[in-house]
Length: 185
Ligand code: NI
Image (cartoon, rainbow, N blue to C red; front, side):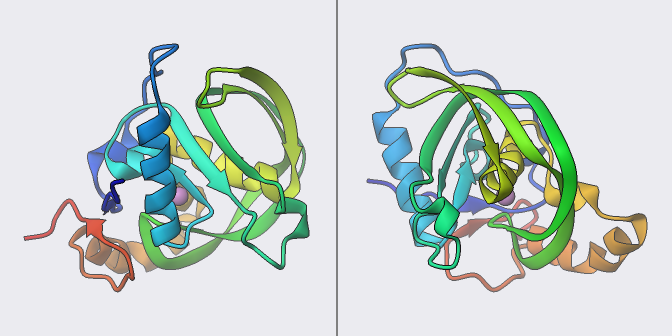
């Protein structure tokens, strides 16, 4: 078992469009390690770029959130996912990210997402998710597209956060989990 340090804002790996995994490859160890890493950091979602791997893989587990009963069976692995459609009314929610510690900001996203993906055993799915499930998937999917939730903020908000984001890139941030900061001296 391996717990990876979480890659911080500012690292180029978070800005790359990740590449598909080779179909049929054994993901058992990697997926187990990603779950360990995510639980250690108290996250509900983790994408491979956040552990420095530019591959199209993310995991979610919302089953531990007592105040979100809709997520009680929401533990899944998404391999080579492809968003097919997003629709419905946009709604706002304060998002956070393990790669951007101690910052939460309101992000607007569409209600429903339709996504094709494989699980870690290479079973194929095409499913629709809405509400908080969609929200978590959209956030994690953004990671493998090289996007971060801060990209959605207004220019003013971005300016206001600039100092904090720079500090995060330098590793100058309080976390209870191990981090890998690109500008750490
Ligand atoms: Ni994130």
